[in-house]
Length: 611
Image 1: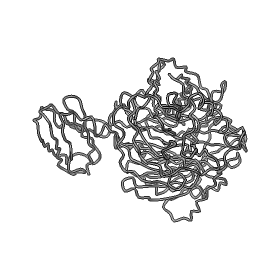
Image 2: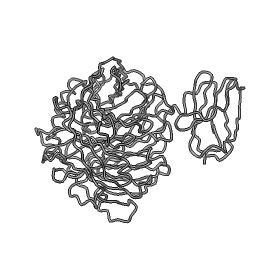
Image 3: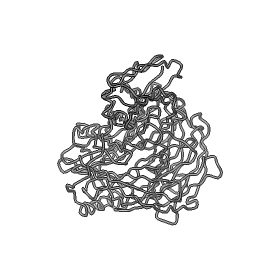
């Protein structure tokens, strides 16, 4: 497959403003504790409206569809000569079907612990799996989880995040479509076992008491705080017709884990002198959440075409009196175009929604993000991948590329850092795919250190058309989730949608490994089969490798933070089969990386586990 990789680099001034928001502070006490493993009568109540917006309605969705029709005329779908893709794609590991969901759509998100426990959520459910065995451990509906809170109204839009610093999970979902029933429900796992007890809180969905309700949560964490970006709508509005503003909650994490009162800040009236921003997406640090500051992104995602990115910065902890929310306005090096609908078979389509920032991460001095767009080259729904370099400084540079494919539509991308060591510049982007001849499925690409995307790797093929709504345009899932495994460098887990064979939505969960973990080997190294054994180990290890010719070789042991533990070998090695053994009985239990570097700089690595 060829791929359009348009990369432009421009030095841009960063407009740093004074605090551009109003702030209210609230304190919320814990409302309940719930044990996910306790026997319960779960009715799994879920209300879904399967009607499309009426023709000519003034809803935002209807307005977006009209803009997209015009974009399809401006950029008609066509074949194009695209740049050849770079390098191998991600390696698919464990891969299995997730939540059995009958609603519209299955808004996927997931988090995975260092013990390979997966919390996977859709629009009304929480499923917990063992990632190694693929076994489901627990299922609970959102209505069942919220039952101790005594809140009426529909439960929807769950989000989940894993905190590797505290070894805990955080679950967020919403309640109610009116100002009187609107609540933001937060669960904090008390331990690293999400099948155990959780502390439950409920925050106001109408904290300004202005007859609005909260929708579209997006969450992320710093080292100390939880951030929830939400949109508010006027009472009684549907299909985004009554959008009021985007707001941000900042919440202390430690208090939630132990069950103390939550200290919170609510930022509103953001950029009051301009058109209100729509959607706020927290951007976490790639290798693990760190630092007290938090960066977030927004853009002009409902415009037919725009080049504005808003970089929001919360400058301290929720408990600090000096914490501010600053807004920096940046300009992209190329416009992002509203994504056209994705084609399905039989004249059906998928709704690709708008161009909001759907995910990102920070690594070093670069902030990576992805959103949906239309490729002007192919006229197909595609991925806009942006990088903000030196984003903390006053002279950032922005580069971007459009990831597209002839005859294929992409939607709802998300991104995770997939490097093995500090300084590795590589990512895995997962997303939905579809075309008029290919049922909707789930795919991924690897982006290398030159910021060039690989061939698309199929994670899960669709098994049927999706045909649920009383319309030819179907909802596609609105989100997909991804997270790196924090103590297993180079490994990412992702969750997305596929046509499930029954004309409905399916959820697919997959482990994705960086191709840098098993490629890039020079001709000097012929074979590294069974590189280390036994693995896991208790005492002695054996490393076997075969060389085509005599060469210089360096073997070094690192911990999972990238720190060198021991240089095992640095010498010229004879051609043929070689065996190196050493005693590691005194190493602390845990995970390590054995890294081999040959004379030409090629690298291979292997994860080791000490019992």
